[in-house]
Length: 220
Ligand SMILES: *Cc1c(COP(=O)(O)O)cnc(C)c1O
Figure: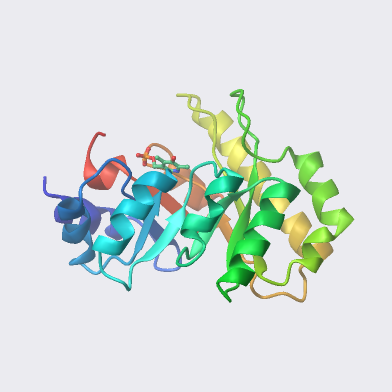
């Protein structure tokens, strides 16, 4: 099937209020343009080096999402244009985003990345770390960072009830943070969860953004 047919089919199965980020890592500009020409404006990349090569050579109205783990020394390269960073997971990273957003006279939207899966990985706040980060309130000093919601990944497993439980936890943490810290902030509204293998469950459990690569572009 063509890339265009793939995204058309995906759209049919996704409610209109759920945003699809087309994760284009390792895929060419030609493939990206095929999806763009079908009306897709939200694209995601997970490596800064790849993103900064692609971004200037593709249409300027693409809204780029950064979905991979982000090193502080690379924030400056994406700060001029990035639309949403899905992977905020430390105070130090937040301070750097604040600094580079200010340099560019922008306010950069970020999602709090939560680590809820079984897998060992360095990225993402644990639920308690995230509670503490929010309670400390240093984020309130960062006027160029807009906290816009949460992001998470489920364990890579065939056990779909486990995946569902992890998505449910992400949603319940979102609800907790919303009521405790953002009840008056309409910008804190996004729940980014669900990829090619598990997005239907993520939508059932409350995702507002899904991040889909393989189902659109094929295997990497
Ligand atoms: C690659 C990637 C995706 C897309 O994964 P697929 O399984 O290809 O849909 C989503 N989120 C993140 C963080 C990724 O790195």
